[in-house]
Length: 102
Image 1: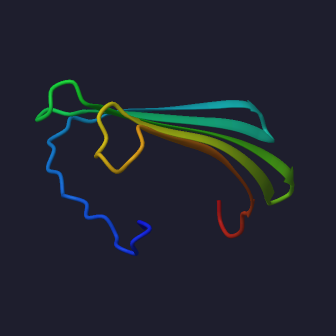
Image 2: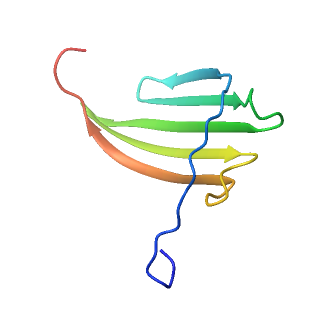
């Protein structure tokens, strides 16, 4: 929000894109695994614009049905809208409990 209390207007965009994605799963042991996904979205209607997303998640089985995960994510755009940054990246972590039929 601006100091004047007004919210800046954001104009809409219409962009045609292609889509290329991949997923890789690594299983090293029974109690750990690593999943990596990536997607590339080249703009067809805006020559030279490319958007790329990636996510890597590492899972560790703590015991029985309890798992811990740690992830890294990233998103990059070669020409984002004027009010948005070119990149966004970060980490997250969490616990999960699996129940029911597998």
